[in-house]
Length: 353
Image (cartoon, rainbow, N blue to C red; front, side):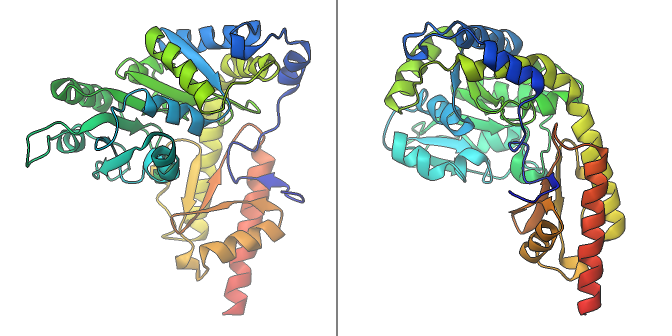
């Protein structure tokens, strides 16, 4: 957005780093449709290696990666995908799932922090009560949970969910758009979660800072079928090595610096809790997202976003709250600017009262 001095709308707004730009300029390319773009192939091999999976497919967006992942598991009409009620696949992507693959969702609440639990998975995977028929084709889980301010599903919960799914004979797809944030916050390797699922995706263009792209990972035979669906869905591209090169840099450099984003988000949360008492619990900020309830300040969330924008700070409206997301292009000075803008917005509201 023009005129913003610090953009906290999302971690998708970042600019490619100088190292990424150099890699993109020098990238060796081919035709990714035919599978002969060497840089794309290297990125896919590296993604599979990091996630502990057999193979991977580089695609344009997180939604595309999720939609191909879901479609790999569904059996057709009358069957369901089970997830949390506020999961990205069951909200933002719900119409896409229906249009592309005829998918409907069965949902049940799990943990108050938004992530799936083993108990919720057990309820979701129960057979149809009238016919004792298994109607859920797939269990979809999310980590981190975007609708819950980037909360982290514990690795032990993921292992418990895997056992429940195995008992029910159901596969698991992991929407791991920000799985590297989860790993950084928990102090684990991503394989603590990816090793417990059948397919998974992660975004290069969020916390890792690449300009474009997500990766779907899983068994080699499933990724072969994923390539067919990728073409069917219109996702195949040509000399994609130009952007895959940035993705390789993101995988190399991005994960280790994520704790910086988390520390800045916590700093922002601590200050907001002091500025607007009752607006949030700083302890709930585990990764790079801060959700602020503006009602205690006598402001609507949308009004606050407009005030912040006028003061050069970008934020978004999520679930009735103001969401701010830290990322590689937000430094300590940016956090200070954001806090100054918040103080001005709150002071302006007080004067109007």
